Image 1: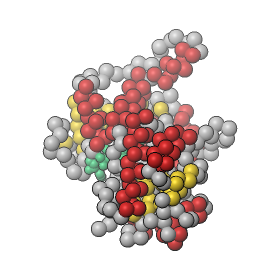
Image 2: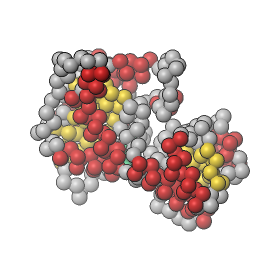
Image 3: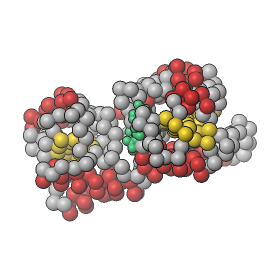
Image 4: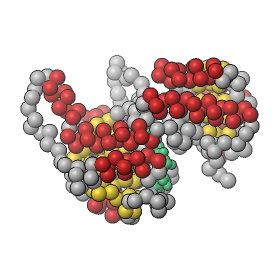
Length: 328
Ligand code: NAD
């Protein structure tokens, strides 16, 4: 079995290379992302292995099918970058539904703590021997209200962690989980009553820009907002407007609406022309990281293991619960 592996970084090879070898699979590692210009690298391959910022749109999938590629192996949980209308009946799509929800939730909590207590600014100050704490005041999380939007695997881990901080939890989900010991409320109530809001729902047509001018207006002044899910859950221009109006105590973004061109890449020698990204980076109460919430040893190993299993299912033609079938 031959697999074209797109958007390869050195850390991808650590687990994938030996595991593919052991499974008797040939993995061809490409640094470029999958898109209309690079799809030809998948010629003569059985599958492509892609990540969050690769593009599997109509044109790309039609090309892949034309080359005889039988599967798309997403090495992530989210699948908003795949056009399922075109994929249906022509190419099988697999994902890694869960690798380490703990990794993402733990990182999200780190962001909440960092923006609240301004650890990012304290670090820079003491590096410069500036030991003043003026301007670094945060709030106690104890007894405050945390609003969790999306109570799937990561949202549930998040709730456990927030409960450890003795926060009161309000949850919102399209499909509330009756088994969870948590108060489900409507979205408006969550927005109005939460001191911390954390996003853990997938990016869909319904959730795109779930955080926008209207929803930001409903939030408490001095709210902390954290997004480690998908960038387009937040309408960036409205977030910037809210930041300018001093709505937020802090904002933590591990994902960004237009991240494709920048995240995971070293752009430090270039001029960044995305004005919204530059603006966001300039706020003292905003922390941006480059989609790294998942990035732990445990998660990387699990991603490689499940992706290799998905590749085996594809080549053996056996059904797998990791197949993504949106249009049935
Ligand atoms: P999951 O499928 O287990 O849970 C998602 C939850 O969102 C479900 O309970 C679902 O009912 C709910 N939901 C769906 N549509 C909704 C809507 N319109 N409004 C409210 N809730 C809705 O997924 P998960 O494993 O918990 O992952 C959540 C998201 O985290 C993924 O979709 C992915 O985008 C993101 N993620 C980010 C990273 C990272 O490194 N930053 C890593 C993994 C996953």
